[in-house]
Length: 321
Image: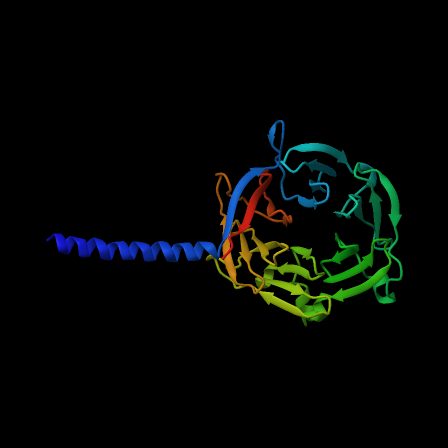
């Protein structure tokens, strides 16, 4: 009997060891996600709704832009508000970017006859100079109306999402290049009407990252106009339902928001699904209608939400194999 029990427990012990070993291997190749807190002030969580988050890595500050209220709030690396200014003096504002010196680049829409305007402001939101986009190709000068602005490694990216056009200039506004995303993706004029771009970002290598929810797809377009894509329609982990924001980190991982499923998905550089997190709910780390996101080199991920849920902050750690 004793020998029988010893054999039974011995076999059980072996199985436990195997389970622990398999679990350890899986964990070691995975991503660890930890909810930290929401951006806050002395009154508690700041109740933002679908705002834009910008990271000033050099100053270790977070800018939150709310174009609906024409306000910009600045938070320190601990997530506490330290400064706020308004944008009322600039009229309507489409979007904002931050350059490496901490200057604010403000994009304002204009009438179709007047186009748009770019203003460089200091960190307090005070106008310093106007940026004139120069040497635009003739065909673009009268048909390009950007609604997004991004700044990356000395370049300004102006994005006209409805027409799927991107113009790249240097820091002073001198034209460098142009992307016709519809032509690159071979989308004809008829179908382009239903191909709205929602999420858009630029990675450290100058690749354009964007999502088109109508076809459940995320795209990466390289500076030499080569396009790659990933995404499969569905409601299970790693599948796309209504995708929105997209970004990448310095390790080459891609982060994609699914607004309907209320999750952020993480894929590796080969588009292999790693994990997802968030989910609808009111608990710590849950998300409500997430829309946009930004990730810093320190592994901090910022996610915007609906319903005045604010901006949730997560820590992302790649566990070494």
